[in-house]
Length: 120
Image 1 (cartoon, rainbow, N blue to C red):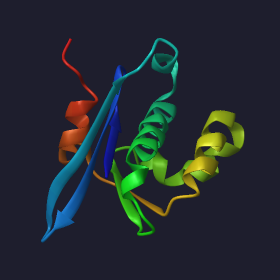
Image 2 (image 1 turned 90 degrees about the vertical axis):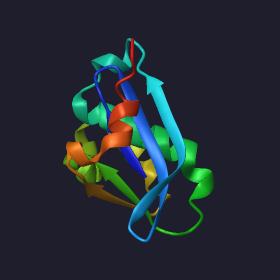
Image 3 (image 1 turned 90 degrees about the horizontal axis):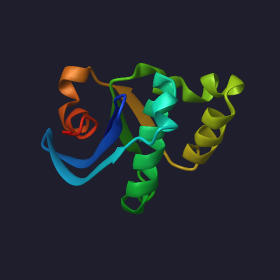
Image 4 (image 1 turned 45 degrees about the vertical axis):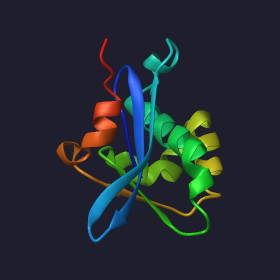
């Protein structure tokens, strides 16, 4: 799975990797409402992650799910949540899944990047 957030929307792609090639299974994109647009960058990226997990979790099973994001702070969501109640709630919800959050440079995170920047 790969996730991304922009100032106006969040996007995610669930894919299966076969022989080193990512084959998309599902797409998710949602515009942010007026309150969500005021979230910090970390909160927007975390919102993208939690929304994608809620949407795609029916496909997870018990296997580990690798999550790619261009926002490396999501790897440390648990540590950052001590001073932010919203991040703490989301972090606790994500704990029920076996997620392996990995950093992927923005130029390589193409599909969720496109989904998080809708045309006007």
